Image 1 (cartoon, rainbow, N blue to C red):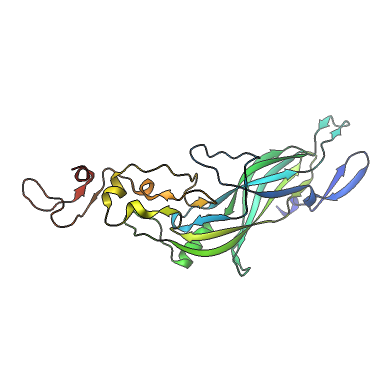
Image 2 (cartoon, helix red, strand yellow):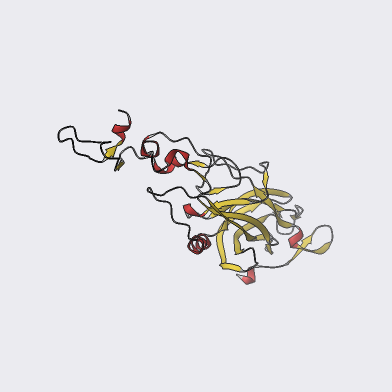
Length: 266
């Protein structure tokens, strides 16, 4: 892969000249996370300075990066090729550093193909915090995986830093890459869940009430907006649970039995 990466790009216009490609192909910023149910992002969407990831969900942090190709469109009359300064993104490299600067996990490469025309910008989804790092952080901090019988948790662990570069080639055949782009992400455990409807003493709310729709297109990944309603996670009309003595009894025997959602409507 190293052979595909070049730090110098020769741009042929009226005369031949060479320019550092990192000045012409770069990541500008990360977009605000999209809202459900559409989960779409456009070039004109807002900018976010930092992200927030809830480790309890064990999902990677995915960010929508605005990538710019500042190369000037040109024509190659000899080979009948136009706009050969268009860039095909071949993939991204990402690594993560802690607050102290120490490397967390290994550099990972994600391969895909996306075209960015000359003198234009486009948004593209990239992995800012890989699953391997998420799992390692959750283990290190002692953040449990979300379960149906979990009590309320909300802990913040502070910032880590995702470093991403996009790698590709021009249609003219020159290998290019963006400069490293650093994006801070706050990590927490349970902080993106609104627990109020699912406390331990109210299983009717937890399992039986219809949840409010959530605004996270990927659970646990946010940079604004409301927390996910816990009922979206636990909603299960077929659930059973052990109630207080005498709360749920068999009509024939009068003995205690498991409670169900039918008991909540009586």
